[in-house]
Image (cartoon, rainbow, N blue to C red; front, top):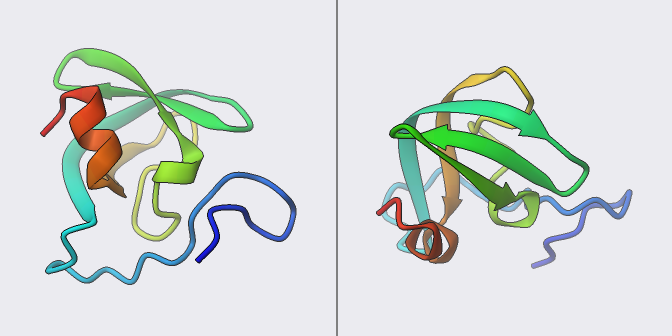
Length: 84
């Protein structure tokens, strides 16, 4: 599995929406405040946190500035950011 797509941008496209997969978590009610080539500034429960795109699933997740919805990310980064 690679965390870099064919264009060299950090993003993980191997997420298969398996709710039983312990490596991934879904966090609801997210607002993407800013976007850079490698990260998203997300508002989660009133806090603004940067998440690397390499730790966010491309499918079914907030991925661009101004979007509101859910975040599907690795459990590791969610724990590191203190959101789970």
